[in-house]
Length: 612
Ligand code: M6R
Image 1 (cartoon, rainbow, N blue to C red):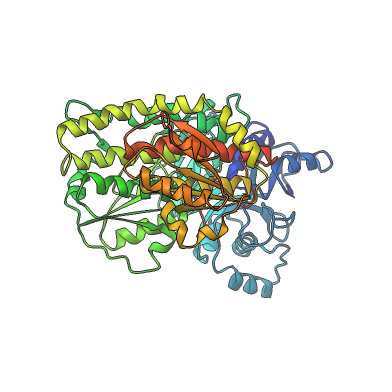
Image 2 (tube, rainbow, N blue to C red):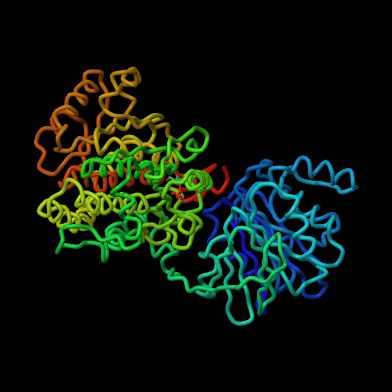
């Protein structure tokens, strides 16, 4: 949430900053800005603008940036203060000698602001961030590091910051608590960013800053210490695997579409090296040291947000199908505000694509503090959640840029399939059952490809319904969470009100909404509850509802009952979410495009929600 880029080196800083900002725009796009230390004057020039990065670039035509080799840039997702020009980052001190970009929330900013106003500081914005610029100014007596550390020691809340000092044009300072920062180094230059996608074009050598770290950065060197102490820490760089082509659109109109179409491959990557046919099970090396904690668990609690929460609900159904371990699923944002019952035999599984979601991270820490074993299912390697869990399963879906999560969801479900089979083989599954499941898993990528190449039907359905104001998504059993996920996809990118419901629950209230203007999308596969869901569909049709069904190929009944049918291949009932979600992703995408909306950057959202 919010994207930060900083640069120090020999090259033109503006072009590197702007390139980085564009790669980070998915993290927030309410406003953006840059501060440069001008090469000729050593003064700071700040240019910022409400709107998307292209609006900032437009402004450069009239408000020209100076030549510079050191600078910072930011793309914002507003928390404190509406998204306007003044509240955009960077924020500066009273004399434009200090400039900073910030990701996170300064919780005690009101108290600090009042104190600084009394001391004579003048504030121009409504943001919490501006307080930091003035607080650093307050403590600045010639030594930037001392001023930054003194200021950060007065601050409650979370931050990832990069700071410029006009009197010290050969350094930048970065600090992190709760909001990720990565530093990349290559010959005579350092690039600091809130995630590696802004760095990868320049280097694959990165240092992941830890909470509490402060870095004093020159173009050739980093001195790492902490907010509390000046003792030097080892600046340990690692190689990242991400490639530039993974974070580019590769000929697709939108990242979301590219990511939907990547799913056959991303799922193969999730399962690579993990299918053990010899033993009819799945091999999960990442959690092998904690596997006994799982098999001996009195309870598993899974916690996550949004799409990851939907995948987690499928995870619960899977684990409970193959084992006798009770599983609960909790919204991460609720978890620590009640009293979750945790014993030393409880295993908490936190699920997150980004590995940086603040609510999920807080739930992880709550679980740890109460003594649970904490495991992760995470996509981003080296992310905070991946590092703070005892062990975990990487989903290996590759970078997901589209704000609407797609391939991360199917990869998370796949991770749960593998985990449940591995656990199931220690509990209720025989070798033959395990092997038959493993063999079916191998078929899933090509079955997804079949759905993706048969999308004409979806186009015509979307043309009929893209102007509707409301949608109902219904499913039962393993496909109830898919109904929730389909509804979330539609509302977040098309702004159409959509509700996901267990199909049979409809008669307890939502059925009142049914009329010819309310499309009901029903997942009605040939599974153990097929007959029941047919009855639910008839209830809708009896009330003149317009029904779109997701059915299995070969189904002869549904076409005569419903208005439109999308056929998908058959698979085992418990794996069906991986296939049934694909048409729902495509429907949400197509409808948003038909409505002329910005699919990859929907209003009010950001890819990774790093504030509570
Ligand atoms: O990175 P995470 O998986 O922790 O993110 C959780 C949610 O914020 C995320 O799934 C969100 O709901 C997506 N926009 C859904 O498409």
